[in-house]
Length: 461
View (cartoon, rainbow, N blue to C red):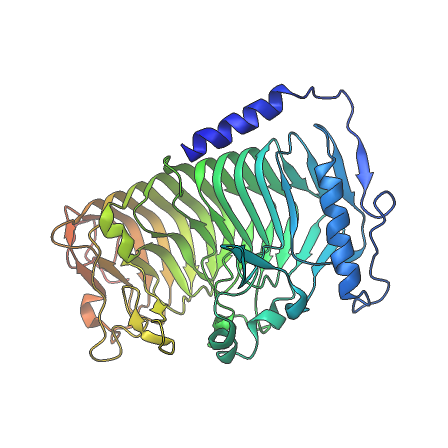
């Protein structure tokens, strides 16, 4: 019903407008009076940031169909709360840099039940749009000043948790295009979305890191929840993008509305972080997803498909393909299919990473920790032409349940080069349970112990 109301609202809006034959271009600085930074580092004040955000909101609200709001090639300090809704065939052209304020105390927060919460509002949010384009004539930059929100490694998360603002969120967008935008140092999620219909994301890049290390060490990974591109909806194409971050890189999410997430293609990309992910999926349906032609340099996880505990109410993942993926020296699990591996904070207790949600982050290395499967369905999963070179940990984890086993799982030419012989699972290489009718084909090695071995070679790579 909510989706129907939103759709009718957009249709009524479109019926009331006529597309102009020529676009009107509004300049953020020259026409709206935005105040740029005049020095590096930026010398603008919090007052300037608040004013710039208000001016951008006025400019966006005034855009007629075919109109363009142009950010010129300079730097503007911004405050959280850029917002627009019901835009039709409008363009936001970011030719410069939007630098988000690091004044945490001044950042506005979300209202809940008419009360102020601790959750900061999103830096930029767009809702109920048709034909919205966010682009640049060169490369636009969104800088989230993430280090100010991450705080001291480890301690910062205990202090602030998830109370950090996402950089960009798109809700209920038809015919959406995002291109030529770089996301740097997001405090939390870089790009999140829900209810996309016919969307394209191309030539965009994410970089969220604490250090310049060519790896995801303990310090860098404390930039928690800096997801790259989280997408949900129907008919989504992401191509020629890159992500270096400390959480999910390209991630398929479930829709909160009635229609499932389906028909998503991610291709010709580079990714390094906590996996090419599907999830965490709760009681949602995901289908027809393809990741292909992806290079993962020194990534933490590789292929990552995960359910949370809510999935036991009826979550499902169907018809998924990962193909032509090269994973170079992954630092954590190269392949993880099953329950979400995450820590959870219980009410009134300190954060404990070994308390799983539902699988413990400390499993299997710490005694008495657990990693239970979730009664959710995976039906139709193919990994094809996947090469993993010199993983630090055992090749992988595949966990279903006896009551809802995984079905129609195929590993074809999934090759590990020099995996550790004395990893967590020894010569079995994989932890594998709750799988029914899985097969390994071609040059796959090692073969997970719960798969039927139909490979054409028994040679160890």
